[in-house]
Length: 358
Image (tube, rainbow, N blue to C red; front, side, top):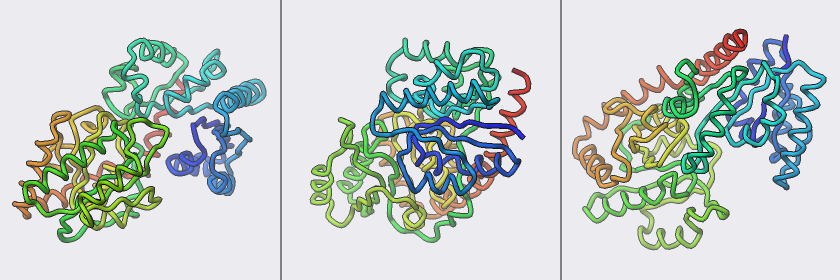
């Protein structure tokens, strides 16, 4: 039996994305504490029902939130023999002052750098220095981030996986494209619209489902006004769903996932789509290039070349037998590579093995 402290930027995302490995840790009679801003009462209740300890951390004041988190970590380090698992570079950057010094049971999981680090060389150098200390076990989502920030023998997880049983093979052909993600520039929403507009101009009669929220605080987000304009332009050929907790039904009525993102950690939507037998069309960028194999579970395209995506979509709909086979191989690839149970086992096994060597 051991004590684990998981540090995350949100209770809501902790429940959504970490639930499986938290359950595994608790099943092994470990005590598990989660330190994260208490931003969702429902998630807090569900985590406590699993047996997770949830100390109070405010969520409405950035500076106060991370002051309290650091004080909580300091208290736990003084009085508890915890193994600490910190998710996300940004969270680690704000808590390393209490996590790093003299800590021999520290795991840092890097799941996407974000534009702050990708656009600032000095910031990358600083964070690399902080995570390559000998007392830190590093886990990466993709190979590019290991090369940028880690060491050659660091563990690359290749995504957190998905509940395969929650998704079923998409049957038939719906003539519908789907995008799932935040409605911001870096995630490729503008390129998705450009692809769809060009297809319409070429007379390709398809529909588009856009699943995701507007982000008012992000200047690159499309706005509510933009959505209304697009609805006027495309009429009932485009559907904006907003945030949807369960996307499986939308996948089951789609043929292709569009994700022309500029960079990813390891895209969950690709794993979900593939689990539904939906191939993914992505740019050949970090994260996406790790998730998609050409002609197996989708296609990769040169970054910003949305016209090549348009041409591939035209080709696939002109050749339905090829599209049908690609759907089959996408599902098969997901079954072999994207099981959350297998990913959870690998993650826990790797960190337990590596912590013994620190």
